[in-house]
Image 1 (cartoon, rainbow, N blue to C red):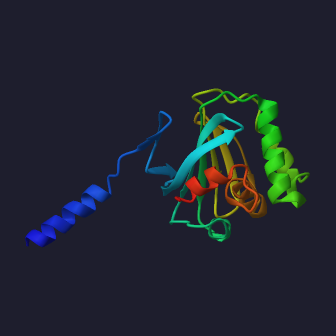
Image 2: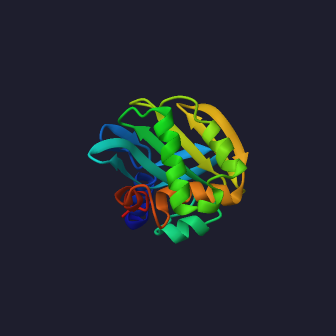
Image 3: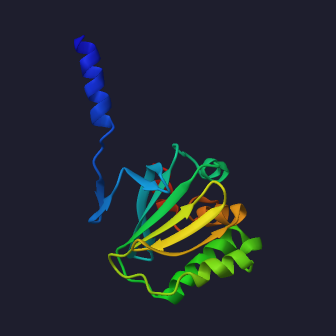
Length: 182
């Protein structure tokens, strides 16, 4: 009986994992998007030269241990960026274009890429949170500080966006490791 109670207690405590903190950003152990609960797969810091730009986190339905596994997984995912440094709109657009050029060159000039990039209308300031929901059905939904910026639907494009973070040529290799929980 004691063993059973101890096991129940361990399960209850493990199920209520507290948020971790990275560079002052509270990284939640799980998020709910469209009534789906996604678990934190991993997180890390995106650096550009010596500047810490944002804390990036990947949430998924199941544990994803490698880039190929993440890119081939058909479940819902969320990429969350909590900005540590302000970034101008033009630089954000350039960064996404570069990420697409490096990981999905055939989609750089696509209608989906143009629509996605048109959603970015403001600078991202220190303290801002940007969510990119990548649905298993190909839905790509972007939010800036909780405000929906827009949605598009393309499974190949959703995969291309994820590849910017965990593909063969990620924007930041250290961030990729962090997002994959390594």
